[in-house]
Image (cartoon, rainbow, N blue to C red; front, top):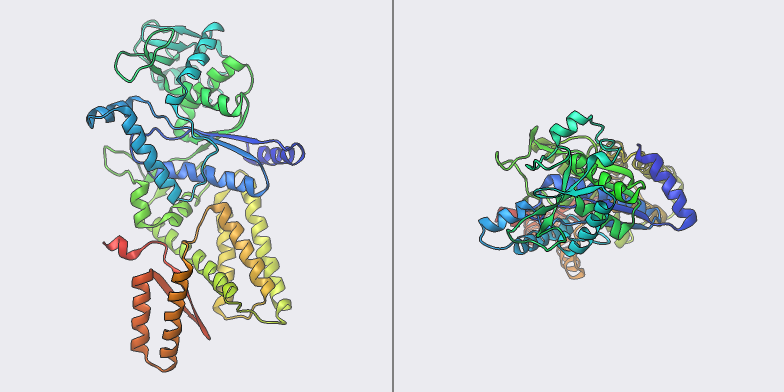
Length: 476
């Protein structure tokens, strides 16, 4: 199913009925630091949400935390602490990473451990409908009770059996049956009508999605590795209980590889977001994650990173060219006729960019158009062309819309910093006019060291721009 038709039709409904578009994203299991693969999935959905909201759509965005899981328990045991502490540590690190990446906060972040009574109630209702049963090691969903099993992954019965996470339990009716509740005496456990234990993996998202968004949601997504068994099982248990379509649209984001290899802790090629933020900064990470169609694999290499850095440098150049001229009122009269064709061209770029996004989030073509927009601005200003206020205002507004949708963000600078920087630039300009180039170069170096900025000299003035990351901190 194409996102384009669904998205367009849904937006038309929202415009007439003031409906809310409901999105559920499967979040992370909080047992370790997030990596570049997590970043890609969450950034893709962040851009989807931004694109919807800038078109005045009302969005409810729910993203869960799996805060109880065998991996969390194992981590707690290895570190001689408890599962609650582990999940808290890595939930906090999640927010540090994704706040730094300028990802909008979800409407809700439900946690599994906060919804145990809801999970027990959901399972009880499945048992009442003969969709689930008690086995030796837990409660299982009866896959044969749901005729549509396999419709998402489009696999046949034999493939589903071989690909399933088969629990060792001879009392299972069918090898495909999956655990809703796992009996256990090892802490942490919760009391249930069937015995102490903890929830299975798949049940949590069905429960939290229906609680926060209702039994019918518009868009459900996650990484492609979740198609089977996780999302297949979500559909079976949700539609098995509620007897209605669970999600109108499924979106699955492609995997990130490292130098053409799958990321794996065993070979040590997992790249943590926290490390990347220090190395390249948030905007380069976002541009990388948006550099191809969201369903396609994305390979992380140093060449790709270097190219992405250059792209961000071009974008930030365009921003600072417009910002400096706007803030300092570098405008001229009687040049509107010359600029109107260019302004029309730039406006058309934005329209085309949004058309590509509306066509199944075609990031590859959309970002190509964005960079054409940026190149056109930079080329125009490199020739020191005169501009009027209308051109500056409208072009800056276009760029800000591009940047909001993509989530790119210029580092903020205090008014005090601006005044200090520009006071030093004025001194440097005076020294240059007196041909005291050695002294003026010292000021350039001091500004770079103290404020982490680069200077761009134009005819008659000098503008400055913040670097994407703090080079001094990176070296230290």
